Length: 358
Length: 260
Image 1 (cartoon, rainbow over the protein chains, first blue to last red):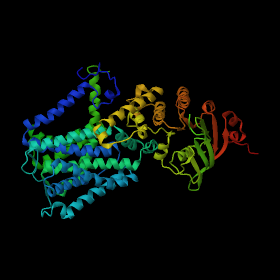
Image 2 (image 1 turned 135 degrees about the horizontal axis):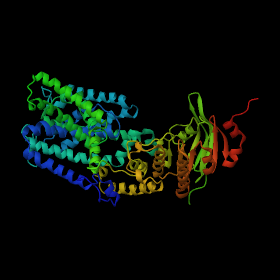
Image 3 (image 1 turned 30 degrees about the vertical axis):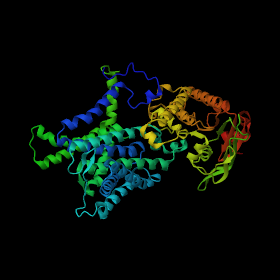
Image 4 (image 1 turned 45 degrees about the horizontal axis):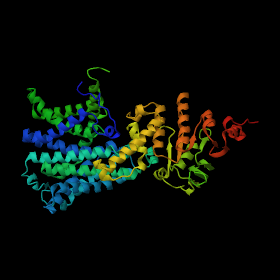
């Protein structure tokens, strides 16, 4: 009854092409965005900001990046961790080499560096597809991480091999480094994610997104329409790597504070891929839902036994956590292979008719 | 019209080989402006291979293909599309995950110009361009009577409608030459009649030249200005439908020759 579009007539194509064409959606989304900017910095504890919300935002950005490549352009990639490492290490080098450079500029520049690297590793995609491409992108994952481990220049010859985010300010507030407040870092992360999510949505609903999906769905038919496969796939690799690069920079500068190459190993590539699959391939909203699921679920599971009054040995609880987490992933994929975004869509369709069944 | 004289498409002595197999053997044919030409022949005659050579998927082993008087034998498919040649496929090749509207909008791709930054912001010229092309696409949707399904994912449509959407996608490119590979395969009589009407309307209203492959002889004889017959990769007949129907070589190819 509440969620109803009766009486809302679209009289222009512009109204019909709007991202949120129903008034209720617009109100809800506006409220959510404003709420996300205002409420957590006032209410949330440091634990919530640092352990839940900031990683969620950083991973959501990486998931959007991979979703552009895998969900929209159909190019399976396991190189996410490598591209995030490129972003993180470029941000570190840029921020330490040019201390006066605005940190937001650093983020964008490190994204561009990652995009350049992504373009190079995207070249094989012209010849190989599907799982074979995934294996080829593994090369970037292993090569890049190896490179950052081996060449001490990337860590400014730190003996520990770690990179640490320096203190940098934005509008006079310290937003990165050891002296920054979690709420400041949260707001920066949220701002970045909001801007880049809007850009991603604009790209996928226009000319570029359609040529990506055309390549994904039927590459031969796409070519005869005039889509150039190499250019289109490379653009997807470039933009996707840009997002992953900014996310990698955010991982170190806004979330972890300092990191070694271990933070970017193959498991992070899989983690982001799971987010995209569980959230929904080919959906920007799905990237958020998937990231939320993967970030939140372990925390919920870790606290569940305590909340239920069970006292389990720590080791046993860890095992159970992993088992339940794996089981949940399988459950969701069986219930809806097209991800949480599809479940959300079905819910909305049902809601339009509620309380009537048809 | 100011269009120069001469045929739109000239295929001259084209052969396509796959290893030792000669799928198309020195075939020459011309498609005049505003003509509807049907290419017929028994299974394996090389009809689709010929179409694939014209649209740039295969490159001829010998011979030349000229479009509007210019040689374009060795172009890749996207370049062929840029010349103004669009096509549909024998087994529907829609983008199944995209809505009907997006499928047809994709057909406008070559008519759109891109500025990455503006598109990222969906602002100014980028937004205007989207809306202009949307308006054009809506005219095609009206023309082919598929208004009701414009937001449906293409993969969920029944086969006959998918064929129609594929035609819409090809028309969205405003092609000079439209290649249709079995546009009526697997359709029932009513769907075939609809499709015939659309093909004739496209030809008359947009002045689009059409080359089509079709097995239904009734349809072929009804709608085409000229019929080209292939058999075992060779051209064995070329002329108005009534003439081809009486041609002994064509009859032999279809009905077989009595062996003494």
